Amino acid sequence: MNQDIQTQEQLIEYLTSIDQQHLITYINNYTQQQITEFIDQINQLNKNYPGGIQEYANRARKLLLDASEDVNPFAEYTAHVPQGQNVDIYSDEYSRLEQLGVEEIKDTCFVLVAGGLGERLGYDGIKVALPIELVTNTTYLEYYCQFILNLQKKHGNKLLPFAIMTSDDTHKLTLQLLENNLYFGLQKEQVSLIKQEKVPAMLDNLAHFAQVPGKLLIDTKPHGHGDIHTLLYMSGLAQKWKNEGRKWLFIFQDTNAQAFRALPVVLGVSKENKFELNSVVVSRKPGEAVGAICYLVDKNNKGLTLNVEYNQLDPLVKAQGGEPVDEQGFSKYPGNINCLLFSLNEYETVLQETKGLIAEFINPKYADATKTKFKSSSRLECMMQDYPKLLGPQNKVGFTALNRRFCFSACKNDLATALTKQKSNLPLECAGSSENDFYWLNAELLRMAGVKIPDQISDEVNYNGLEFKFGPKIVLHPSFGVTLSEIKSRIKGNVQISSNSTVILGGQAELHSVNIDGYAQLFGNGQFNVDIKDTNGPKLVALEQQDGVPGYIKIRGYRLQK
Figure 1 (cartoon, one colour):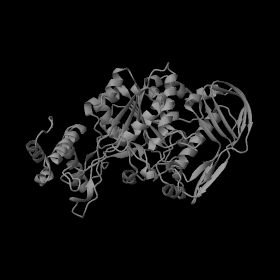
Figure 2 (tube, rainbow, N blue to C red; figure 1 turned 180 degrees about the horizontal axis):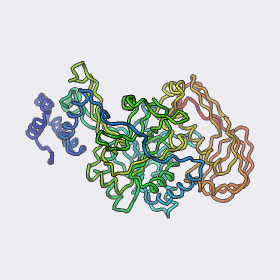
Figure 3 (cartoon, helix red, strand yellow; figure 1 turned 180 degrees about the vertical axis):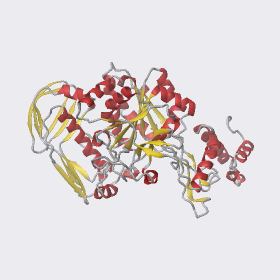
Figure 4 (cartoon, rainbow, N blue to C red; figure 1 turned 60 degrees about the horizontal axis):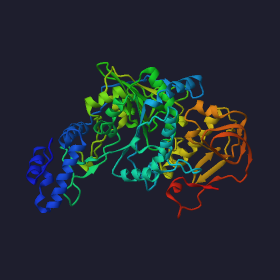
C-alpha cells in the first residue's frame, strides 16, 4: 500500500484485496469517528512494517504453514563449534586488546534496547530506571550515559551517538527520565529515541487479523527486539552515522551494567579479526536455558555462525551425540548474551539491501489437533541476534568469550524464580545477583590494578531461603576509569580496602597511601592519602516486611542499613 487510505470505500476495497474482509463485517455498526480511527490505524501499521500489513500477512502464512506441519527450521543443518576468540581477563592479551579497542571508541555508536517494563521482576516501572546498586542508587540509564560521557572524554569530547529503542510501554517514561535529569550529562542532540511499534495479532493459519473486543481496531502485540535493525534503517540513523565516518555499532540490553567494561576488548577483537559481527559470549552448561552460538552447515556445505535458542538446540545436536563439552564440563557452543558489535560499513549496506527485516518466527498455541485455529491470538516475532540470517558465507561473523561476571549480569527474574535457579545451581539473574556482580567486578578491577582487597564475605542475606553473599561494596564511577589501564593509572601507592568496606571512587582521584576499613567516598581531583576506620559502615540486611517498601528495594529482598 503506497498511498494512505482516505475513505471508507477505499478501506473496504483494500481489506478485501488482502483477504482481511472479516474486519469490516460489522462496519456499519460503528460511528464515523471509530471508522476514522480504524483507517488511521491501518495507515500507521502499513508505515511501521516494510511492505505493509499485506507483506506481514504473506510472511505469516508461510511460517504458519511450516508450524502446522512441524517443520524444523534446522532440519537440514549440522552444528559445529564456531570460530571466535577466548580472552582471559587476567592475561597480557587482554591488556593488548583493550588498548587496541580504546582507539576505536571515538568511532563507535551506541544502541540500547529498552522496550520492556519490569513486570517479570515484580517491578512497576521501566527497567532502565532501576538502581543497579543501593550504595549510590545509580540507575542503569544514568550509568550508561555516564559511561558514554567518559568514553568520549578520552577523545577530545567528540560526541558519541546514543540511540534508545523504546516501546509504547516505555517511550514516555524513558524520555521523562532523560529530561528530568538533563540527559545525565549527555547533549540532547546526541541521544535519539526510536519507538518500536506493534504488529497485528492473528487468529488462524490464514493470518486473519484479530480485533480488539468490541472495536473495529486490529489487536496488536510486540514484534520482538529484532525490530532494532528495521528501526535503524527506517529512521536513517545507521546511514547517517556511516556518512559521518563512524565505524562501529554496539547494541546492548537494558539491564546489563557489565557490558561497557567489556567493550574496549571486544572492539580490539573485532578490529584485529575484521569481524562484521562480533557477539560477546559466556560459558554455558549443556541444557542451560541460554541461546548458543553455533556454526551451522547445510546440506550444500554452506555455513553461518548463528545463535540457536536453547529449546531448538537439543533436537539439533541429539543426532550428533549431544553437545560437545570442554574439560570443565562447559558446552563448546558458548552462550549468547545479546551484546553485539557490528562493523557499521557492512551493517548499513546489509540494511539497505534487506530493510533490516530479520527472519521471523511464530509460536502459535493451537485450539485442537487440526492445527488451524489458535487458543489465543498469535503474532510474528523476531530477535536481534538472528541478524546473521541476512548474511552469506563471505561475511565474517565471530565471537569474543569473556568471564561471565565480567561482561554479563542480567536483571530479569523475580525472587521466586531466582530461588528456583539457586536450587538448580544456575545464575540467578535477579536484582540482588546483579548488584552483587556489580560490586564484585569493581573490586576485581581494583585488584587487577594492584589494590589489596581480601576475597571474603562481609554481608550475608537470607530472604525466604534466597541467599546472597556480598563482599566489599565498591562502586567505581566511570570517571575513575573506563578501562583497566586507566584504573591502574589512578593507583599510585599502597592501597588496601577491607572486605567490610563500602567505597565510592570517582573523578581524577589518585590513590597514594590509602587504607580503608569502613565507609569512604573519594571523589574528585588530586592525591588521596587516607586511613579510615569506620566500624559502623552500611550493611545489606534482609527485609523484615515489604509493606511500604519501594519497589526497587522490594524486588531485592534486602535493604541497605546505613
